[in-house]
Length: 287
Image (cartoon, rainbow, N blue to C red; front, side):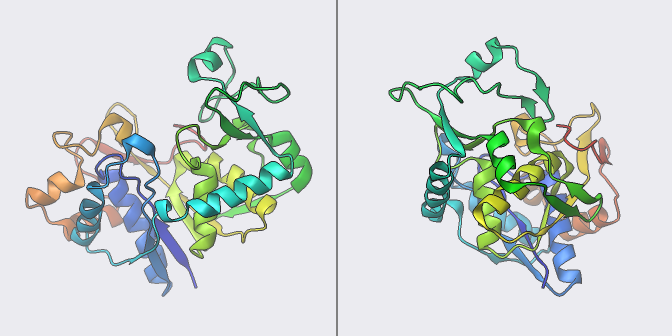
């Protein structure tokens, strides 16, 4: 049975890009007689706004979608801790106290998701009085896993090679887990068989495939869909406040203004975008 999920974070209102992602995941599951899950990723520290979760549910209902809701990330903290301890015991994690400013000062190379950490803390004793994150020693991880592959419905069979992203953070300084660890563990716990998300997260899937192998987790299929871009060529994003009132792309604002959500979902299904929005598949790893 195909199981997909939509997993928004309540650090900002949903925008039109979220609507498209939810519709794609919903339809892929329903067309195959499968299940579509809603999971709230609510461990983003002070940025998390719990009051938005009810709006998320109302927005999905307005679009005409049906879902099963599973446990939010805040109910799964124990599983993140267990996995991190296991990876640490295997010698695959190291503590990092570097700040973003310190990393930028080293002028590291740019990767598909931004600055690539140069491994400053990998082989040194860190000051444990400073806040620290836990990073994955990617070279050690790949030496442990050997050659890996993953299957994308739109791109075919992909050789897993996350080196372009460097030693990524698995446990943040300010949160119980980073995106890569939490999403990988959650998808396995929820029985997700088809990970559906935007093409901007294509490179993240390389990392998730490695984590699945290290932690003995099941391997799903992936489906990376196209992204919604504004006229300036940038994707709709919460970081750009694309879901806030006044942006023109916020779902809650559209719903409260009396727009027909089901009609909007149907237009998205046939690729009919509102004026000022294009649907484009970024080159893999673009942001």
